[in-house]
Figure 1: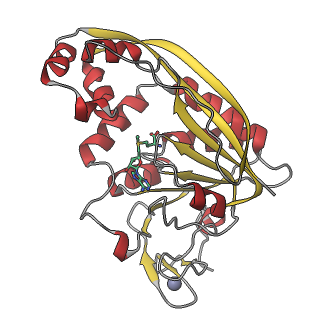
Figure 2: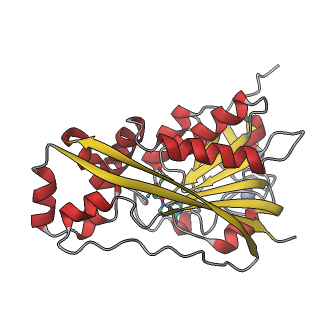
Length: 287
Ligand SMILES: C[S@@+](CC[C@H](N)C(=O)[O-])C[C@H]1O[C@@H](n2cnc3c(N)ncnc32)[C@H](O)[C@@H]1O
Ligand SMILES: [Zn+2]
């Protein structure tokens, strides 16, 4: 008998990017195939490229290898651990009872959040089926290595490689917001957990970079087809040594729009103390 991979339940959440048919795995050939015969090889790490050819705008779309590695090193250092713990708690709260939750991480990056949620739900007795996708192949490769029990693929949020109504919970952590696709992937009653920065997230960093730093606007935007259930804010103050500051900087949108003098001030610091804060907004797909 061919052994079933440990992520079989998660792979069942994927769909063909060409015809939207269900994908099934041939474990011996390491290929995903739809009924119409479109097939997608699994890479060594176990992920697939499910980005439709006509949507591959750039040769290597999504975050660059350098950005992904900076994010990976920074998240590994643990400063954002309280956000992961809070997110896992929310997933426990919204997970269905009596069966494994189907979880999708849209724009999953290098997989730290999906992995933290998986570990927490598994420890509570019911490991979820986790699908994660991202435009960046480098990010997906790391995510697949980190959480072999998940089904990770290269894919985009605006034409997502996930079956209609499969997701109980959909995570969107600082990745593009694709409301129509999020609604399509969620089952009625399913929950979108959407991370936004709190007013003073990384304010200490902005004080170094800019002469006049602004707080982030905080609004509870309403989205068509969703009911806002509530928000959960987690804030902390962290001290980041010089060695990790450039990784943090490279993860932020400021990296691309900071004047040279601001970047030089940051590079000269021995360490930086800053407030950090995420707000998780929970939106339920209307029945
Ligand atoms: C700020 S990072 C966040 C990654 C991860 N969620 C985290 O918080 O660690 C944004 C991610 O969105 C990905 N991305 C950008 N456009 C995307 C799209 N249209 N669909 C899916 N992912 C996308 C990037 O490659 C990058 O990994
Ligand atoms: Zn197909």
